[in-house]
Image: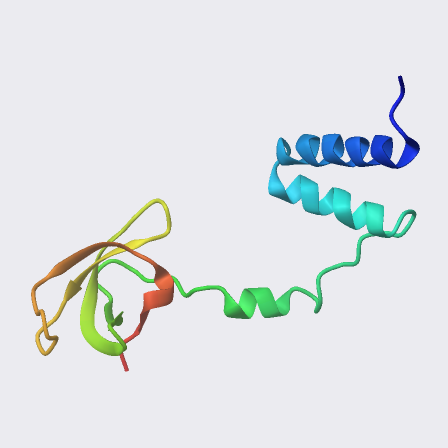
Length: 115
């Protein structure tokens, strides 16, 4: 015997959710946005792209004197190496709590030019 219409709709919803779980998150979000507003074009990101460029982490050069954020404080340091993945190896400089300590794969967001 066939399932009642309400139960059949619930089964279809569950099947759709299972199929969505197999898709990458970005694709699921895009599908949800299209489903929410059929025929509507996706809205461009706010602004004209300059905000993203302005908030992009700074880049540093090997040997550059910098400050490294360590536990809420900014410690003097220098860039020992620039890694291919965009991270830095940083050596804490004299005056830092752990002077001489080398830190690997530090994100640019934790580094700023030394004043």
